[in-house]
Image 1 (cartoon, rainbow, N blue to C red):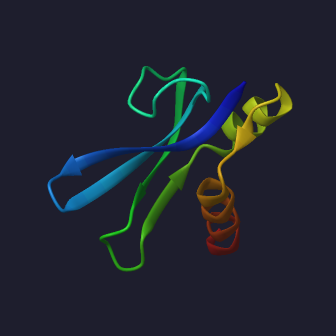
Image 2 (image 1 turned 180 degrees about the vertical axis):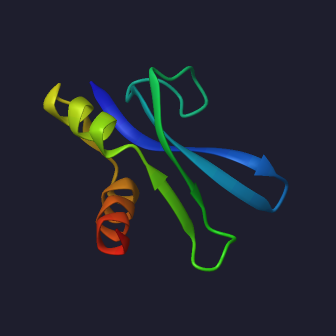
Length: 80
């Protein structure tokens, strides 16, 4: 099963996240299929960059979303 979820990156105590499509049965640090955006919580306001075309394409193929990603997508749509 495919899931759109966050993958942590960045420096110690300064995380930055990639929004990726990966297999939900694998570890969060395992290889991912596609990167669909980024989330940086340390900027003001927090930076959310999404390729909505890719997100919609993966959801159409049956990918689910984590609750955090679902919230980030709603926030990004309000900002646009």
